[in-house]
Length: 330
Image (cartoon, rainbow, N blue to C red):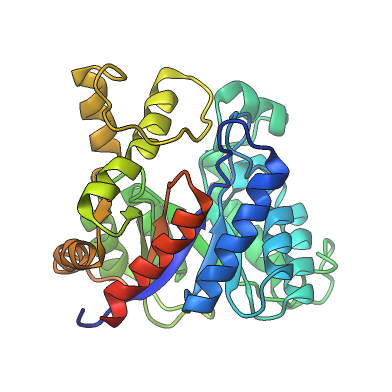
């Protein structure tokens, strides 16, 4: 693949039906370790709350856990939902992580709550929300930057760690904000595929250099189901179909085993909605994935791909990384 981007992973720590959170996180560690051996650049963990079946709620704790069980791969948040947290707390947490694992920590930020409105209020009771996102990014940058004379509020640890900040999003707003602030930008194509071309174009066209970043750097997140054959990939993909269907129905998001047919599990409208949600899903063996990736990369300029891999069997999920890796080395 010409000019192949870097490869990275996004982890939701999805709990298999009947498994414990402890087992889930042990599988996440083994998954990250396989990615590290294969040369993947980053392993990011999402933030979701009040969702049965998703165990990535205490994001900074999981970042530290994965970083402590790996040696070289960058580990970070994909992302911290900033409206849920005081910037000082995030600066202290990620400043501590950077102090423990120097040069390996990323701080990806989102402006959505990552949950429903009732839970969002339970997380942060002062009424602050996404409308203050730009100001809170600036506050966080200040807390993670060098100490200034007379600075009244200091993140200790955190000050002068300069943890790299990324903006994450699924809209033109976040792309424009990342460009104006001179920050790296990641587009959430794994669940919001429609605007990826426009957002990434706006980001590059509007980018203004900053102390953190002199030239634009963008990432596209994609859902992927790598397998040894297209037939197996179609079978394994039914796990992700069932999970997204449950999301639309407001049901628990336990990861369910694949099925040979979705017939009878969804109606035509639900099928269309799930497929639209996963509109950028990559499916198949290495050759098929490579062809699909080439089609996407021919329409957009990006520096890095971040994959979400929803596969029920932990061993097959780790093997999927071997197959993904073949798309850039074969």
